[in-house]
Length: 193
Image 1 (tube, rainbow, N blue to C red):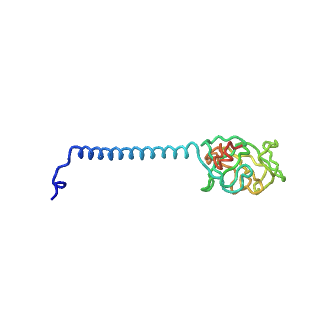
Image 2: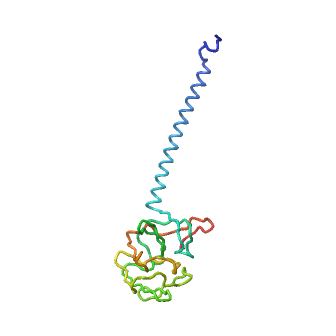
């Protein structure tokens, strides 16, 4: 047999082996730290997305021309909407996006030509391109019940909203966010009005 197999490792070889093992241990610790950081970071992001800044993706045409199919929105989890704001709310397992027209106690009337009156006053709606009565099967005028709001989509001829018994007035408890920003597409990034 050769001396290569019968000899003990040299001090340099032992030091090199020890250094290599130490580096592997440090790399494993670094990997564990990175994985732990990513797990915590992901949990924080999920918490923020669910409880503070909910995200929503537009589906359908009921909010055109303000919002279009596929756009990504971010809101703030807040159940105190104001008239004119765009909100998201849960309805029969779906998250819907509509505009607040009236609050609890307000009287809403919609004329045949789609003109909206709240408490007898004409509502200025610069976000509506074409007025329409739309899918309205409720008795008008209506007084919004306590703890609820009246919502409508901006594309009045196609939106199914508080004018329909399918949706009706919306419980404040079902609101998931007040929409703040359009995140995507990036070319349209900005505040929602």
